[in-house]
Each structure stands twice: as C-alpha cells, then as structure tokens.
Length: 321
Image (cartoon, one colour):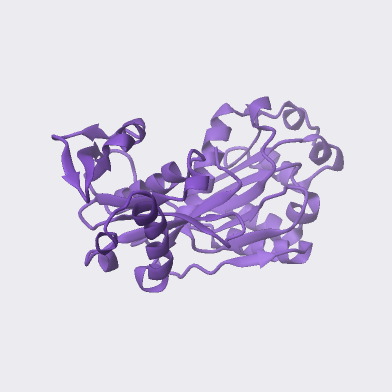
C-alpha cells in the first residue's frame, strides 16, 4: 500500500548531489561511522538515482542508486522513516528502471543486518561474507524475468524524452486543468482512483471527451476506475458512468473492498508517466506532473493491488440507461 506520507522520484546527480550527500552522511557517517570519503565515488555521475521525499516535498528522507550494469547500492533511509516502506519503494523504483533497460539481473552488496530485507524482495545470497567500509556484507543477486514487460509508465529511454515539472494546485479550476493535462497525454490507458467520482472534476465536457478518446484508442485501450462510494455517481447520473455502460470493453468500474476504504487520497495516472495526486479526496489541493515515471508507477502499483481485490459495482450494473 502507498504510504501517503512520502513518494519516490528520479534524481539527477548534477542537480541533487548535495541532497544525496547529506542523506548518505546522516545514515552512513553519523550512524554507522563510515569514512566520509567512501560515501560517494566516481560512479555517481553515471548512476540512476532516486530520492524519497515527504508528501509535501520539503524533506528528503531517503536515497538509493543503480549503476549501468545493475548494481544497486547506497541505500539510505533516515532513522525516523524506517519501517514505513521507504526502502521498499526506492528498491522497486530501481527494479523498474532495470527492467526498462532490459537488464537480466541486478545485484548488490548487502549489509548482513539487511539481508532479510532484500530476501523479502526476491534477492538471494551469492557468496561469502566480506568486509566493506568496516561493515560485514554479502553479495546478493536477483534475476529479472525476461517475460515480464518493462513498465509502460514513460520510463527513461522510452518514447519522447520530457522533463519532470511538479505543479501544485489548490483550486477546482486548477485541479481540472491538471487532470485534463494528464488525460491528454494518455495513449491507451488511464487509471482513476476516486472517492465518489467527483462530478465537479470528472463530469465535465473536456475531461469526458478525453475519456472517450482513450476508450476508443484501439484494441489496447483500458480505462479503469475505482470508486469508494458509488452512491452519488449513481444518483446524479454521472456521465462517465453512462459512458462506461456504452463502452464496456474499454471502461471498467469497481469498488475497493472494505479493507481498502480507509485510503484517504485520490489520484489519476496515465501510461506516459503523468499523474495527478490529491492527499485528501474531498479537497482539490494536489500535485501533478506530466512526466514523473517513478511516481506514476508507484501509484499504478497501488491501484493494481486494490483493483485485484475490488468488486464490480452492482449499483452501476443495475443502472437503467
């Protein structure tokens, strides 16, 4: 499950070096007494980096990297944020990038105390214990399934290259514009996670037209909607529901199971790396980015987990058109 308190985003060494250094110093130098000269090296400029930040984007709380040959390392999470899933989220983001690069295997040198963490993610020990930076380590590897397709969330090296640009909004008008931007960038797929399919946002001409376009974009079209409380959408005759009844092959609506109804956020994500995220579903304060593939993939992973547990909405199936 996505923790509403943080998110993971791609980092650039030239722009984020100081942030990454500071995180590594706090974890490796201050806590583990590692030699400060060892926390960064000549490989850093060529590595893929990720940074975890709190939901407001004000505090960097974790970082990790992966080299071109698939070596994952420098995994650092601030003490107050451990056991919150930050390390897992960063690791998954790097694995997504490894698959995007068609790597057959990734590997790492795990501190002995962290072996169980990596085993939980499928890594296996591949050698004897050795000492690195004064700490016992063991080499671990993970084979990547060649049959598993790389993520379609606009990852690095796929499709037109765009730059990440975070946009914040605190008005309905701004939220509509951000949602429209995400929809317009979608090729064949769109995921909507909503409290009650908010009519002021989604029952609007321009957004409905984009939903129609995506649904009719071809045989691969897939528009999935999760609605926590479908009552209002049914009662008000929401036009997206009506559209779903006419395009049943491409548009599917489900209701999360009871265990997932305590999720307070709402979001929208597409298949080119764009998303709109609102931490409180009953408000229109939010953040959006038309190209942040890691954050977008994180949202879709959670959506997929909830979708598999969700049920078809009986109220919508019985809706008289």
